[in-house]
Image 1 (cartoon, one colour):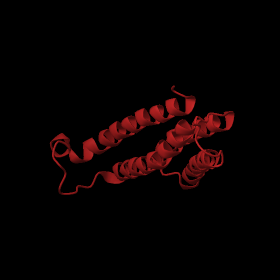
Image 2 (image 1 turned 120 degrees about the vertical axis):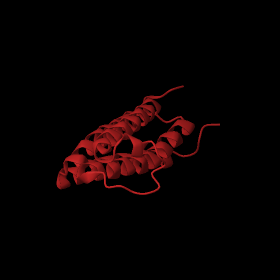
Image 3 (image 1 turned 30 degrees about the vertical axis):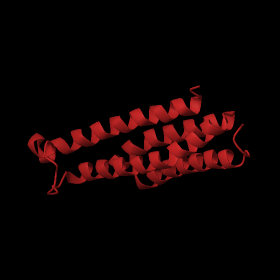
Image 4 (image 1 turned 135 degrees about the horizontal axis):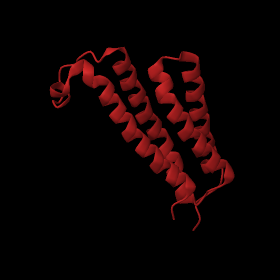
Length: 136
């Protein structure tokens, strides 16, 4: 059964695809399509915005590595509560806000939305690990 939390995990996967496309589109004018079609063994300067887009993408992949196990733990344990749904929603919205805020270079707001996402993921883990064992 696809829970709301699993649906939000899938939505975040789609968001990652969008972030990859944005990162490539931002880098494209600085490095050109021929370079982007190579294995990129030699690094090229993608500009300030291109560098920020790459770092936002890297951070978003790390966030997926933290979010996905929390959601999968909940799914395996059969846990879906208003708290877990809200936490997953907060995570996805925070990550959606994080990328443009990072690319725009807004430091304190970036930290705030990053923190909201981390707190949301921590909540998911706390609920997942605090609910006893998986059903038989």
